View 1 (cartoon, rainbow, N blue to C red):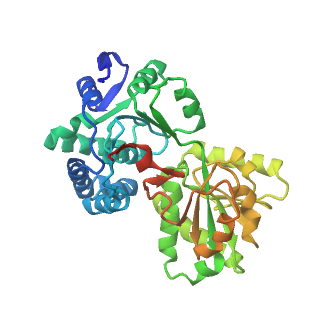
View 2 (view 1 turned 90 degrees about the vertical axis):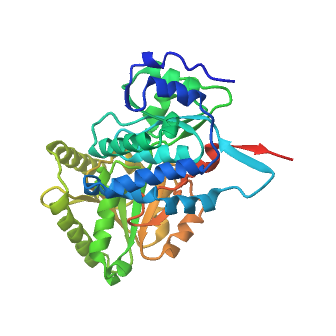
View 3 (view 1 turned 180 degrees about the horizontal axis):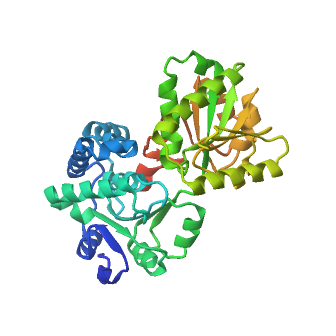
Length: 405
């Protein structure tokens, strides 16, 4: 049964990719099989354009996206997720309505690519803030669509404010709704009804941490690379990404020496690359004072120029996340036994654990039946997107199975 595709020209939205006519075509266009060759070729074209654009090279998150969309990378995903069972056929579920977070520029593009590769038509509410990364990516997508116009009915990227009428309209046509914006956004969007057989994927507020084995760190020959990786995990998004470590846990018996080298190497990068506003600085200082007043035994360590604020805490507990901050604001804890951080990780809000050293030291914690931690990755890979995300298999959630007996 075809959807009602009228009145999209009456929606109070700004089209960044597509328009009201394309939106109508999107609703009625057929879903594709996952990893359709035309979609793979389109993404390869977008990737090629991004990776060759000098302007894009100024933004590591855009270049990372471009590498992730390369044909070789997509083919690797295809080998992992394609169905070999001849008694079943997979197709996209239909229209996917994505609500991207407002504070992580490139997230919407990963959500779009996932929807496309799973065979779906996609309408995405992108960040309203004028991020340079968003402008670059949208420009390349529009350019690629002029070369492959057959893909136009599968992509609409729009901006709009807190408009319940638009949420209602897009939720009404959606077969899948993907909400990346956190708890408040989830609660807001859920006021808009969906079709009875529609499904929803929500990404609630989460937090992440890093565990650094001081002995392993001091033995590492690439400390400058480690510092750059940690910078990419945290400062590129002002620590706003759910994957960005907010707590740094130190293990081993050379913690003092390792800390000094680690934070010094990071600070050298920040001086060259990171710009902090007055508001960010004041917020960090205020958060530090509040934490010190609320939690006995807290010690504040700054870099002098406020680029790094480390709040040394006597214990690492999940309630710290109620008074967290960003833009280089870290809880820091010296750990003698990995189980000391179990309470912090035994929370459904705990998402990614990044590490330096051996992942074997983390396994006892993971196997202790904790409620949190969906990902354990080396520092530098927290932002690496995958179809297995936040505990979801996005490939399964965005496709449907047709059984043939």
